Image 1 (cartoon, rainbow, N blue to C red):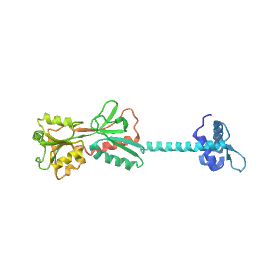
Image 2: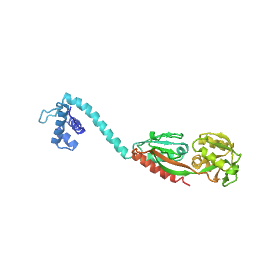
Image 3: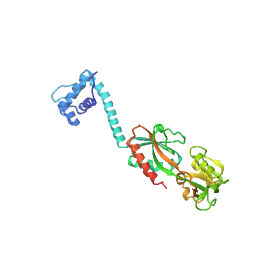
Image 4: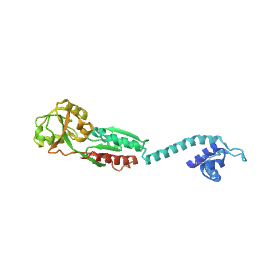
Length: 296
Protein backbone atom coordinates (compact mmCIF):
# COMPACT_ATOMS: atom_id res chain seq x y z
CA UNK A 1 0.00 0.00 0.00
CA UNK A 2 1.33 3.44 -0.93
CA UNK A 3 1.79 6.22 1.62
CA UNK A 4 -1.02 8.59 2.51
CA UNK A 5 -1.19 11.40 5.03
CA UNK A 6 -3.68 12.81 7.51
CA UNK A 7 -4.94 15.39 5.02
CA UNK A 8 -6.30 12.55 2.87
CA UNK A 9 -8.09 11.04 5.86
CA UNK A 10 -9.45 14.43 6.92
CA UNK A 11 -10.81 14.93 3.41
CA UNK A 12 -12.49 11.50 3.52
CA UNK A 13 -14.18 12.28 6.86
CA UNK A 14 -15.25 15.75 5.69
CA UNK A 15 -16.86 14.44 2.50
CA UNK A 16 -18.77 11.81 4.49
CA UNK A 17 -19.90 14.33 7.10
CA UNK A 18 -20.88 17.05 4.61
CA UNK A 19 -22.28 14.80 1.87
CA UNK A 20 -20.43 16.44 -1.03
CA UNK A 21 -16.96 17.42 -2.19
CA UNK A 22 -17.97 21.07 -2.41
CA UNK A 23 -19.22 21.41 1.16
CA UNK A 24 -16.20 19.42 2.41
CA UNK A 25 -13.93 21.92 0.63
CA UNK A 26 -15.66 24.85 2.39
CA UNK A 27 -15.26 23.13 5.77
CA UNK A 28 -11.59 22.40 5.22
CA UNK A 29 -10.74 25.72 3.61
CA UNK A 30 -9.66 24.12 0.32
CA UNK A 31 -10.87 24.31 -3.25
CA UNK A 32 -13.12 21.50 -4.48
CA UNK A 33 -10.43 20.35 -6.88
CA UNK A 34 -7.96 20.05 -4.00
CA UNK A 35 -10.36 17.82 -2.08
CA UNK A 36 -10.86 15.71 -5.21
CA UNK A 37 -7.08 15.35 -5.57
CA UNK A 38 -6.73 14.31 -1.92
CA UNK A 39 -9.44 11.66 -2.29
CA UNK A 40 -7.78 10.42 -5.50
CA UNK A 41 -4.45 10.14 -3.66
CA UNK A 42 -6.19 8.24 -0.85
CA UNK A 43 -7.82 5.82 -3.32
CA UNK A 44 -4.45 5.20 -4.94
CA UNK A 45 -2.92 4.57 -1.50
CA UNK A 46 -5.58 2.06 -0.39
CA UNK A 47 -5.85 0.40 -3.78
CA UNK A 48 -9.55 0.98 -4.43
CA UNK A 49 -12.47 3.38 -4.70
CA UNK A 50 -13.70 4.95 -1.45
CA UNK A 51 -16.63 6.88 -2.93
CA UNK A 52 -19.24 6.13 -5.58
CA UNK A 53 -19.91 9.37 -7.47
CA UNK A 54 -23.38 9.27 -9.04
CA UNK A 55 -23.01 12.82 -10.39
CA UNK A 56 -25.50 15.69 -10.46
CA UNK A 57 -27.21 16.77 -7.25
CA UNK A 58 -27.16 13.31 -5.76
CA UNK A 59 -24.78 12.86 -2.76
CA UNK A 60 -21.64 10.81 -3.04
CA UNK A 61 -21.81 7.40 -1.37
CA UNK A 62 -19.01 5.79 0.61
CA UNK A 63 -18.02 2.33 -0.56
CA UNK A 64 -17.45 -0.73 1.67
CA UNK A 65 -13.69 -0.13 1.33
CA UNK A 66 -14.28 3.51 2.22
CA UNK A 67 -16.15 2.43 5.37
CA UNK A 68 -13.15 0.40 6.52
CA UNK A 69 -10.78 3.28 5.84
CA UNK A 70 -13.13 5.77 7.53
CA UNK A 71 -13.34 3.72 10.75
CA UNK A 72 -9.57 3.80 11.16
CA UNK A 73 -9.30 7.34 9.82
CA UNK A 74 -11.49 8.78 12.56
CA UNK A 75 -9.38 7.08 15.23
CA UNK A 76 -6.14 8.32 13.66
CA UNK A 77 -7.48 11.85 13.31
CA UNK A 78 -8.64 11.86 16.94
CA UNK A 79 -5.24 10.62 18.12
CA UNK A 80 -3.48 13.23 15.99
CA UNK A 81 -5.66 15.97 17.49
CA UNK A 82 -4.98 14.65 20.99
CA UNK A 83 -1.27 14.74 20.25
CA UNK A 84 -1.47 18.32 18.95
CA UNK A 85 -3.39 19.34 22.07
CA UNK A 86 -0.88 17.61 24.37
CA UNK A 87 2.05 19.28 22.60
CA UNK A 88 0.36 22.67 22.83
CA UNK A 89 -0.30 22.14 26.56
CA UNK A 90 3.30 21.03 27.09
CA UNK A 91 4.70 24.09 25.30
CA UNK A 92 2.36 26.33 27.27
CA UNK A 93 3.56 24.83 30.57
CA UNK A 94 0.47 22.77 31.26
CA UNK A 95 2.09 19.33 31.08
CA UNK A 96 3.41 17.09 33.85
CA UNK A 97 6.27 17.65 36.26
CA UNK A 98 7.70 15.25 38.85
CA UNK A 99 9.51 16.83 41.81
CA UNK A 100 11.68 15.10 44.41
CA UNK A 101 11.85 16.67 47.85
CA UNK A 102 12.82 16.12 51.51
CA UNK A 103 11.26 16.99 54.86
CA UNK A 104 11.90 20.67 55.50
CA UNK A 105 11.52 21.58 51.82
CA UNK A 106 8.22 19.65 51.76
CA UNK A 107 6.95 21.77 54.64
CA UNK A 108 8.24 25.20 53.62
CA UNK A 109 9.43 25.68 50.03
CA UNK A 110 7.35 23.12 48.15
CA UNK A 111 3.77 24.18 49.08
CA UNK A 112 4.06 27.73 47.67
CA UNK A 113 5.86 26.33 44.60
CA UNK A 114 3.02 23.89 43.91
CA UNK A 115 0.40 26.56 44.58
CA UNK A 116 1.97 29.02 42.15
CA UNK A 117 2.42 26.39 39.43
CA UNK A 118 -1.22 25.38 39.73
CA UNK A 119 -2.39 29.01 39.77
CA UNK A 120 -0.42 29.74 36.59
CA UNK A 121 -1.19 26.40 34.88
CA UNK A 122 -4.46 24.96 36.27
CA UNK A 123 -4.24 21.96 33.94
CA UNK A 124 -0.75 20.87 34.97
CA UNK A 125 -0.10 17.48 36.56
CA UNK A 126 2.36 17.59 39.48
CA UNK A 127 3.90 14.44 40.94
CA UNK A 128 5.82 14.64 44.23
CA UNK A 129 8.24 12.09 45.71
CA UNK A 130 9.84 12.56 49.13
CA UNK A 131 13.27 10.94 49.40
CA UNK A 132 15.63 11.19 52.38
CA UNK A 133 18.40 9.00 50.95
CA UNK A 134 21.99 10.17 50.48
CA UNK A 135 21.78 9.33 46.76
CA UNK A 136 18.43 10.69 45.55
CA UNK A 137 16.94 9.29 42.32
CA UNK A 138 17.47 12.43 40.24
CA UNK A 139 17.05 10.55 36.96
CA UNK A 140 13.51 9.50 37.93
CA UNK A 141 12.13 13.04 38.33
CA UNK A 142 12.29 16.37 36.51
CA UNK A 143 13.65 18.31 39.49
CA UNK A 144 15.04 17.19 42.86
CA UNK A 145 15.52 19.28 45.99
CA UNK A 146 18.67 18.19 47.84
CA UNK A 147 21.10 19.55 50.41
CA UNK A 148 24.24 19.18 48.29
CA UNK A 149 25.28 19.39 44.65
CA UNK A 150 25.96 16.05 43.00
CA UNK A 151 28.36 15.03 40.25
CA UNK A 152 27.90 12.36 37.65
CA UNK A 153 25.98 14.37 35.09
CA UNK A 154 23.72 16.17 37.57
CA UNK A 155 23.25 19.91 37.11
CA UNK A 156 22.24 22.14 40.02
CA UNK A 157 21.01 25.54 41.08
CA UNK A 158 21.75 26.74 44.61
CA UNK A 159 18.64 28.11 46.30
CA UNK A 160 19.76 29.19 49.75
CA UNK A 161 22.13 28.72 52.66
CA UNK A 162 20.16 27.45 55.65
CA UNK A 163 21.87 28.33 58.97
CA UNK A 164 21.78 26.06 62.01
CA UNK A 165 20.17 27.33 65.21
CA UNK A 166 19.62 25.96 68.69
CA UNK A 167 16.02 25.20 69.65
CA UNK A 168 15.55 24.82 73.39
CA UNK A 169 12.79 24.54 75.97
CA UNK A 170 11.98 28.04 77.21
CA UNK A 171 14.15 28.94 80.18
CA UNK A 172 16.92 26.45 79.40
CA UNK A 173 19.25 29.24 78.21
CA UNK A 174 19.33 33.02 78.57
CA UNK A 175 18.08 35.04 75.62
CA UNK A 176 20.56 35.69 72.83
CA UNK A 177 23.30 33.58 71.24
CA UNK A 178 24.46 30.35 72.87
CA UNK A 179 28.06 29.16 72.69
CA UNK A 180 28.90 25.53 72.01
CA UNK A 181 30.79 25.43 75.30
CA UNK A 182 27.45 26.02 77.05
CA UNK A 183 26.12 22.79 75.51
CA UNK A 184 28.73 20.50 77.04
CA UNK A 185 27.01 17.66 78.90
CA UNK A 186 23.54 19.12 78.20
CA UNK A 187 20.75 16.77 77.01
CA UNK A 188 20.16 16.98 73.26
CA UNK A 189 17.66 15.59 70.76
CA UNK A 190 19.12 14.91 67.31
CA UNK A 191 18.70 13.37 63.89
CA UNK A 192 20.30 9.96 63.24
CA UNK A 193 24.00 10.21 62.30
CA UNK A 194 23.31 10.39 58.54
CA UNK A 195 23.17 13.12 55.89
CA UNK A 196 24.25 16.44 57.46
CA UNK A 197 24.08 15.34 61.11
CA UNK A 198 27.72 14.13 61.33
CA UNK A 199 28.88 17.63 60.33
CA UNK A 200 26.82 19.12 63.16
CA UNK A 201 28.30 16.69 65.64
CA UNK A 202 31.82 17.46 64.39
CA UNK A 203 31.07 21.12 65.14
CA UNK A 204 30.36 20.13 68.76
CA UNK A 205 33.60 18.16 68.97
CA UNK A 206 35.72 20.91 67.42
CA UNK A 207 34.37 23.32 70.04
CA UNK A 208 35.11 20.93 72.93
CA UNK A 209 31.45 20.25 73.68
CA UNK A 210 30.08 16.77 74.32
CA UNK A 211 26.29 16.87 74.56
CA UNK A 212 24.30 13.92 75.86
CA UNK A 213 22.14 12.63 73.01
CA UNK A 214 19.00 11.44 74.80
CA UNK A 215 16.85 10.77 71.71
CA UNK A 216 17.32 10.46 67.95
CA UNK A 217 14.56 10.66 65.32
CA UNK A 218 14.61 11.10 61.57
CA UNK A 219 11.40 13.14 61.59
CA UNK A 220 11.68 16.88 62.25
CA UNK A 221 8.33 16.95 64.03
CA UNK A 222 9.41 14.13 66.37
CA UNK A 223 12.64 15.97 67.25
CA UNK A 224 10.77 19.19 67.99
CA UNK A 225 8.06 17.35 69.92
CA UNK A 226 10.71 16.01 72.28
CA UNK A 227 12.19 19.49 72.68
CA UNK A 228 8.71 20.78 73.49
CA UNK A 229 8.39 17.95 76.01
CA UNK A 230 11.49 19.33 77.72
CA UNK A 231 13.84 16.35 77.50
CA UNK A 232 16.54 18.29 75.65
CA UNK A 233 17.47 20.90 73.06
CA UNK A 234 18.21 20.42 69.35
CA UNK A 235 20.44 21.94 66.70
CA UNK A 236 18.39 22.22 63.51
CA UNK A 237 18.44 24.15 60.23
CA UNK A 238 16.43 27.32 60.45
CA UNK A 239 14.14 26.22 57.62
CA UNK A 240 13.01 23.30 59.79
CA UNK A 241 12.33 25.68 62.66
CA UNK A 242 10.35 28.03 60.44
CA UNK A 243 8.34 25.21 58.93
CA UNK A 244 7.30 24.00 62.37
CA UNK A 245 6.41 27.53 63.57
CA UNK A 246 8.95 27.11 66.38
CA UNK A 247 10.04 30.76 66.06
CA UNK A 248 6.71 31.84 67.57
CA UNK A 249 6.18 28.88 69.92
CA UNK A 250 5.59 30.03 73.50
CA UNK A 251 7.35 27.00 75.03
CA UNK A 252 10.45 27.15 72.82
CA UNK A 253 13.30 29.59 72.32
CA UNK A 254 15.54 29.81 69.26
CA UNK A 255 19.17 30.90 69.60
CA UNK A 256 22.04 31.69 67.28
CA UNK A 257 25.01 29.36 67.80
CA UNK A 258 28.53 30.67 68.39
CA UNK A 259 30.78 29.96 66.69
CA UNK A 260 28.49 29.43 63.73
CA UNK A 261 28.08 26.02 62.13
CA UNK A 262 28.56 26.25 58.35
CA UNK A 263 24.99 26.39 56.99
CA UNK A 264 23.23 23.60 55.22
CA UNK A 265 22.84 24.46 51.53
CA UNK A 266 19.73 23.63 49.53
CA UNK A 267 19.88 22.99 45.79
CA UNK A 268 17.64 22.07 42.91
CA UNK A 269 19.10 19.20 40.87
CA UNK A 270 18.25 17.85 37.43
CA UNK A 271 19.69 15.36 34.98
CA UNK A 272 22.30 16.89 32.69
CA UNK A 273 21.63 16.66 28.96
CA UNK A 274 17.88 16.20 29.37
CA UNK A 275 15.66 18.80 27.71
CA UNK A 276 13.58 20.45 30.41
CA UNK A 277 9.92 21.22 29.81
CA UNK A 278 8.64 24.81 30.04
CA UNK A 279 6.89 23.74 33.25
CA UNK A 280 10.18 22.57 34.78
CA UNK A 281 11.91 25.81 33.75
CA UNK A 282 9.11 27.81 35.36
CA UNK A 283 9.33 25.67 38.51
CA UNK A 284 13.02 26.55 38.82
CA UNK A 285 12.24 30.27 38.48
CA UNK A 286 9.51 30.07 41.13
CA UNK A 287 11.72 28.04 43.50
CA UNK A 288 14.50 30.66 43.24
CA UNK A 289 11.96 33.41 43.92
CA UNK A 290 10.50 31.62 46.97
CA UNK A 291 13.93 30.71 48.37
CA UNK A 292 14.95 34.38 48.23
CA UNK A 293 12.33 35.16 50.88
CA UNK A 294 14.02 32.72 53.29
CA UNK A 295 17.60 33.87 52.90
CA UNK A 296 19.17 35.39 56.01
